[in-house]
Image (cartoon, rainbow over all chains, first blue to last red):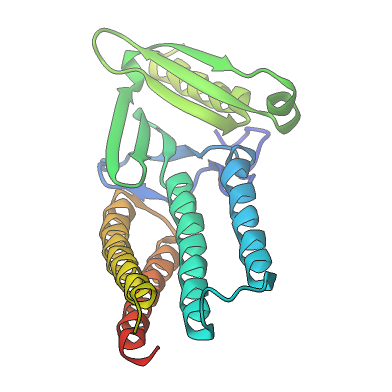
Length: 183
Length: 70
């Protein structure tokens, strides 16, 4: 696994052999790869935050006689707190939605809107097929895409959406599968 | 104090209370998330989340004080 040509990169969204632990980790279970959404996919909320900051400045330069100075101060305080919360909420949403490849299984940890938790496991021995989907100018340019891992029987399939270097990630998974199946 | 000032203060107080509750819920959830995924940045994440709770408490205090001062 150490010979993979991509090292940890893209703002902690593709981490090889990370110093990370997760709550259901078993003894002797080693994490080989940790994936998050590519930072470019976060551009929507980053631009929205910048727009909010610009709006705050613009509103302060418009002369108005509806509110007095004290009220304007409190409104500004609220606006700044709102922008900060919006940014922090999105950072948390990005940071804690991870895909983990270990020596025993593949885990998808999702926190929807920070409040709802969903953890999907796929044991390496139960994995039947891995698919990489990457297309379009932006995905090709920034080298990111989605990985779909199909499992046998009624076990839930695992999806890693918009992760960096998907081909390299699948290469690591395939190597682990070959090792598991003794090929 | 006219109707506009009273409305302003009521709306601000409600926002301040909801923002404080929101910050508390996020802080609780961050603790759960930190337990689920432990790495070297957990300390920083907890610090920023505590900062958010503190700021929300300061805002709540400022709003309560503004009811009597402004």
